[in-house]
Each structure stands twice: as structure tokens, then as C-alpha cells.
Image (cartoon, rainbow, N blue to C red):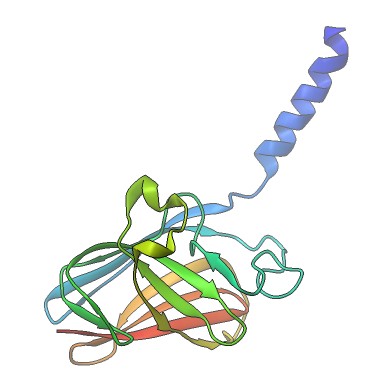
Length: 171
């Protein structure tokens, strides 16, 4: 009996080891006006899947944790105006509402393990995201935080065939 199961277990183990890593730790950080703004996340890979849209991984009107594994976290040592939302220095969890009428970045006051599940009552606020299509599909989800001159910056998320961004200013 053991002879039958050993090859099956070895074959299954080899299959699991051959799968691509779908979680990549990521960090995007910028210093603007002498203050640090950072996003820490775990990036997923598309792995040939359709990511956004009908019959896709993330369907319309989905609140998404904007990553996999640990919650995606915004750290700021500055007071920010993030797309019209006032954000005090501290740590926040980021979610994205994937809405066909316009994506929204959700900034949540909840953090840590409690933020593994979205709770709307913990919203600090929501801001509109500008969406576009990257020049080429983005295999592994990526956040970036970039200076845009003076005390301005741009928070961007890109994955698959979508790039979504929110401007911010350091107060």
C-alpha cells in the first residue's frame, strides 16, 4: 500500500515546488519635504490570469486589500492631503474599491491582523483614483511613491492592464 502512495506524494510535492511564487514582499518609499511616505505590501503575480473585469480574479465592485497575505500598509511621518483626504502622521491600511465607474483608494484606520478583513466603519476616507493602462502588462503588482516636485507626490498601483494613482501633498 505504501508503494502506491509514495510516488503520488512525491509527484504532488514536486508540482507544488514548481509553482511560481505568487507573493512578493514590496516596499515603495519617498522622502518629500523632509518627510517619509511609504507603502509596504505583498505583491501578487498575474500568472496568466485575467485580473480585472467580468469573469476575472477581481470583479467589478470588489473591495480589494491591494495585495495578498499581510494587509497593505501606508506609513507617513507627514500630515498629507491625499487626493483631498487629510491624513495625519501614522500607519493606515489601504484597500481599493474596484468600481467600473471609477476606482477609489480606501484609507482605513484599522491596522495589523484586524485589517485582514475590510470593515467600512474603520474608513478614514475614500479618494478617487485616476486609472490608465500601462505601456505593457504588469506581471507582478507594484506600488510606487514618487516625488512630483516641491511638496507634491504621486501614489501609484500598477498590475495587469491597470495603473491607478492618487496625487498627494505634504503639509
